[in-house]
Image (cartoon, rainbow, N blue to C red; front, side, top):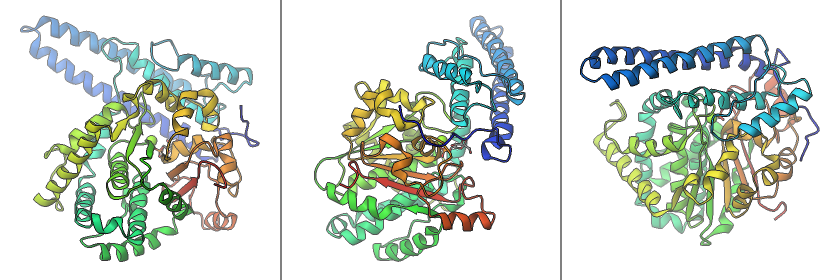
Length: 477
Ligand code: F6P
Ligand code: MG
C-alpha cells in the first residue's frame, strides 16, 4: 500500500482548518440533525392526537417511531459530548449496512498508534467515520432504518437555485439551433467547452455568487462574454488544466467513449454536472455515454445518493418545484422541461446511467463511502479500478474527492499533481474539478501561494479559489 512522505492533516494543530471543523462545524451539523428529528417528532405527536381514535395501529406505529427518534437524539447528544472532550472513537456497531468491518479495521490500527480519538485521528478518517456512525443511529431503529437526515436540507437548498437553473436552461436551449454549425467549428466548441467546464467547477463553490453567468443569445456574443468572464475568473483558478483536458478530449472523436462522473453534492451542483455531461454527449462527438457515481449513504451533508439522483430529475420536471422569481418566464420553464426531458430519455436509453444500476455497480460504489485515500483503489476495490481503466475520462467533483485523491496529507503546494495521487496516476484519464474548502492543495506555483498568504487570503479553504487538475491515462501519452 502507498504511503505518502508527509503526515495527514489532523485537528491537533489548533490553528488549522480541521481543528475549526471539529470544534465548530461538526457540532453544528449534529445539532441540526437533532433539531430536524425533534421537529419530525413534534409533528408525529400532533398526528397521533388526530388518529388516536380512528386508527389505533397508526397511532401505535407513530408512538414507536417517536420513542426510537428520542433514542437517536440522545445518541447524537452523547456523541457531541464525547467529541468535544476528545474521547475515543467507538467501534461502528454491526447495523447490517456496508463497510462496518472496514471502518473498524482502520480504527483498530489507529488505536495501536494511540490516534483513535476525535482530535488525534487523521481528519479524513474521523470525518468519514462520523457519517458512517450517524448512519448506524438511524439503521438500528426499525422505523428509521435508511433515513436520510439531510434530505430536507438538500431539497431546500436546491429550491433556492431556481433563477440560475432557468438561466442555464435558456442558454442550453439557444445552443440547440447552433448544434450542426458547432460540430464543425472546433474553436467555438473549445470556448463553449470552457464555459461548461467552469460552470460545472463553480457549481461546487460554497459561495454561489461566484457562479458563472452563462451568456445570452448568440454564440458570437457567448464567445466574447465567455472569454471575458473566463478571464475575470481565471485569477481564482490556481491550477488550470482546462487546455490540457480539451486537447486530450479532442483525441476521442467517434470512438463511443464513456465518461464517468464521481459525483459530489446534490441540488445545484448535480444540475451543473448533468449540463456538462449533456453538453459533451449532445454537442460533441467525443462521448456517447455517461456513468454517474453516487454515495450509498448520506455523506458530508449534501452528497448525492441514488434517491437524490432520481428526485433531481422529477423535481426539475415539476413546474412547481422552484418558487417563482423575477427571472422565471414561460419560455425558461419550457426550456428547462425540454432539456431535462432529454436527460430522462438518456437515462431510459442507458446513455446516462447511475453506477448502482449497472451489474456489480452496488459493490463498486461502496468504495466512495469508505475512509481511504484513493491511492490504493486498485487493491482495495479491484472491480472499481477495472471499471475506471475502461473509461474515456473520469471526473472527480468537489473538495472531498480531491482530498481523497491527494490523501489529505500535508504535501508542499508545488508538489506535482501526479506525485500527490500516488499509484493512481496513469491508471485512467482523470480530471478533478474542485473549489478549495480544505487545506490540501498541490500543483500550485509557490510564489502565487505565497502572495495569497501574504494578502491574508484563505485561499485553501474559503471556496473562492479552485483547482482544475488533469492527468491522461498513461503519463506522457
Ligand atoms: O468545509 C469542510 C468540509 O466539510 C470538508 O471537510 C470537505 O472536504 C468539504 O467541506 C466538503 O466539500 P465538497 O462537498 O466540495 O466535497
Ligand atoms: Mg460534498
